[in-house]
Image (tube, rainbow, N blue to C red):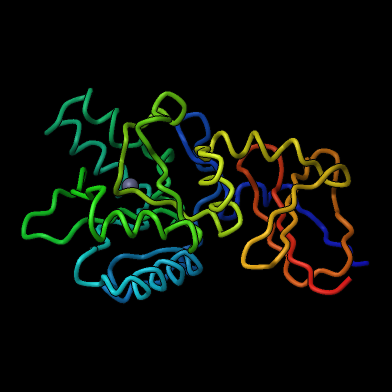
Length: 251
Ligand SMILES: [Zn+2]
């Protein structure tokens, strides 16, 4: 049995933090943990997100067909994009497609916008059709921990119009469940709360590995005790607790 201590300040960190109009960023991203992408060193992502993105691009051999166009943004960069869009596109368009400063996933380093390569790329609404290599990318993304964050179907929940080009890293088991159940991130974070620590945990199987997932209410638990853990990943939800995923080998 091993004890893992939890720090309530960490609920604002991790690959599952919810960032939207109702849940602004609480903790600024550690820019030392960002790395540049092979295709464009100026586009930065959180380390693990970057690694998974580059593996996905490599597997599809699409480094000349799909271009990363925006990754991590600072508060000031997000504010500039918002203000520029307001003056050139107006309020209605901007509210649909551009998040307010501190409400953008791009400030976390966990989100990336991609475009189908062409001579003219629109940087706010890039072309990313549901066909050819872009459709393949979308289909494969969850195996590398990414979800298409804003779909047409969930516009009323996410508050953002459909963005086929915006992918969010959440981690492999979570992306798997989100896709399988057709959730958006908001829905998944409510769903996972049904599986509380020390009650019934959610068990899924990916590539013959059994992964156990559960929610930890940070008001009730300052630590968790687990046995036979091979790999433990804990992320805050940016609200009230943590989501843990546990991989075990022998019992
Ligand atoms: Zn985006």
